[in-house]
Amino acid sequence: MEHHPAVSRAVSREEWLAARKALLIKEKEATRLRDQLNAERMALPWVKIEKEYTFDSPQGKTTLADLFAGRSQLVIYHFMFAPGWAAGCPGCSHMSDHLDGPLTHLEHHDVSLAVVSRAPIVDIEAYKKRMGWRFPWVSSFGTGFNYDFQVTLPKEDIASGKAVYNFANVPAQADAKDIEAHGISAFYKDQSGQVFHTYSTYARGVEEWVGTLMILDRTPKGRNEKSAGDFVRRHDEYDKAATAR
Image (cartoon, rainbow, N blue to C red):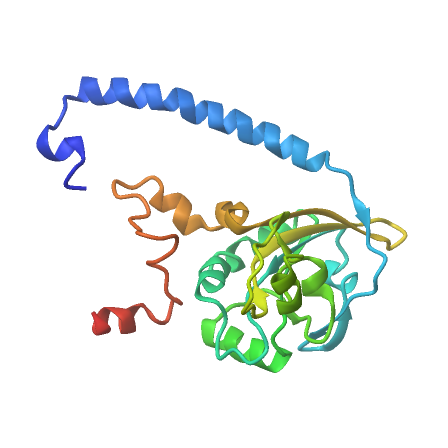
């Protein structure tokens, strides 16, 4: 911020207003482009789901179709939490802090939301309790769901250069390990009960769901990060981080 022009030269309200109006033109262009992208997103063709995916939930076994909970649309957040991990991914946890608030609004607009991870359901439930979240969260442990939706990349595919994430091949790595990744997938269920995959996005495609980032983008310092998300902590760890500093 010490290099920002305002630090050395504050401007008049008139100069600020002229600069702000010039930026507003670009913001409106971006808004119209977003509207266009949304229309094109909804116009994407759909893929019929042929597999019967079954997950572990606190209530027992549940299917992908069950996750719709009587609604015609379903959005899934692919949360990075693998078997054997002590806790969920900090970035995914930051993202998930923004999910409980919209739940009621989504459910009254014919949309169900669920989170899916590979960790066993007992670990998911323990972490969910720690974080104080309410949204539905199920385990895909022992299934091919994460692999089919390219959010778990097996080390064999990474080593051979066959792994795909965000619709592109991941560079081959000789000393590869399984990789967990995050993303969003959307589905539709018709009146006959058939489920269709309608959309997926990964990496920075998830950013618009993270309200904290959208707010920071309007502040003087913006995200104020040296690398993406370097300031993010699990919400119960900020005091610990401050103490350590």
